[in-house]
Image (cartoon, rainbow, N blue to C red):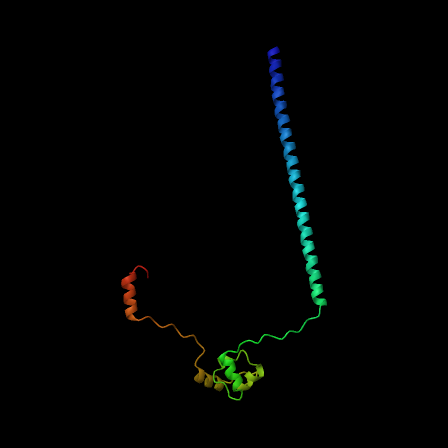
Length: 162
């Protein structure tokens, strides 16, 4: 009987030690998770305060910019392209190539140049006349390669690449 009671005591003490160890591990885990949670909360708070400070400083800068008077500075003159300089030299001559400056000139000048109005646009006769003068508004297809080039390419590269 003494043997069974000592076995029970040993088994009980082993189980108690395992329980104590698991309790310690769970307490350590809880402590570690709480510490990590506190660090995370502190980091979030510091990041939020940093963002708030940036927002406040940006708002203050905007207020300062609005309150300051705008100083007028002469603009930098850009170099005129050849087409612009020709148009500027001869304003009374109608430019036969509208694609060079139609997106730069004022709308009233464009209307006068094409003898039209905004509501109706160009008439069919005017459209046909402009097509004869400037050609159709289509992309030109790429030129096909010559037969010598195609033959040389087939010999050098081979038939596999096609």
